[in-house]
Amino acid sequence: MAAVTVTNLKRNVEGNQRRISATLTIAANNDTWATGLRFITAWGAMTNNSTTQVGGTVSGGTITFKAAGAEAAVYAWAQGW
Picture (cartoon, helix red, strand yellow):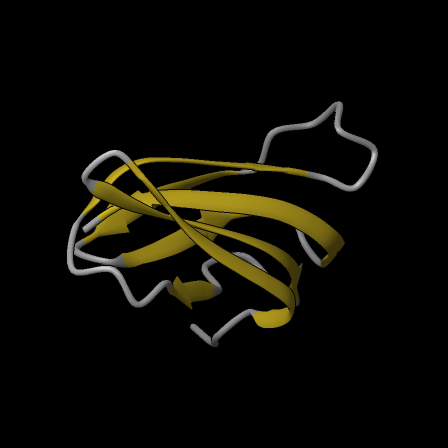
């Protein structure tokens, strides 16, 4: 299990929660993204062609991606506090 590579990152506040958007490179299945949030209430990820969702699991503020293999330019977002 390794960390994803973050190539672009944006942060903003929506209501009482923080939202983080990023472009990621996933090298392999079970790669993780430590978002900096303590608790994630919602998240999503799509491949660069915006037609395929990338699944995963959440633990605290970390997302573990379930990918078939390497994925370049994955757009992901996480919301929480």
